[in-house]
Length: 231
Image 1 (cartoon, rainbow, N blue to C red):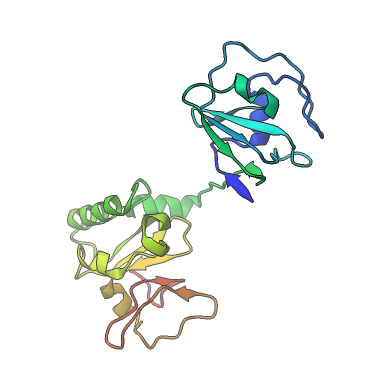
Image 2 (cartoon, one colour):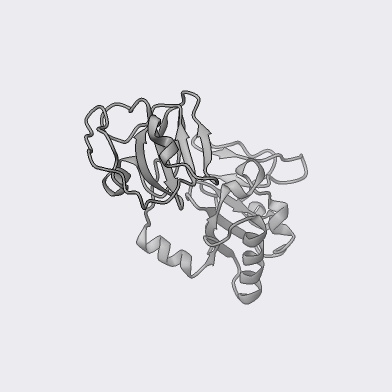
């Protein structure tokens, strides 16, 4: 299945998109004339069924995207009226185009506390996250633990940053940072040792470790709750 995570879903876009000529098959019917003043598509998806979130996927339809938002869903025969010289065309080659399944929510108390800690939510890459951690540690020399959250798995190879990255910027104090989905944690060597974790520590049945340890060095990072409390 091919999914494209755009800022709006296909189903909601249908109600706000520029008018569509013709009638869509299935449970959706929109019959109006196309506006001549519309913008050319930045991206056109063609060649595959389109799931709008209502009924069965639509066959023979194309999806137009302008400025990162879905602008229209039209019969493929009309795509030339949407295309401009800079339009990028993506052939789905029979794959299903579906709305991106997105979720955004916050736990108010925990989210508020994290804003007072080492907040990495605005980091756009690994370098920015490490710079933010180093800056926070330097600005808070009295804190015995550096705790916080917000790093993104896609900024690191395999989704798992290593303890050595933290050791290089905060070598003495323990560091424990939850990732953005709060189902994984990144810790430095000091924190791992305080937790009593080493190469011989069994992985919990309900957890996992991204460790690549040796007999003399602790695991580089852990997932699941640590056995110590950062107080």
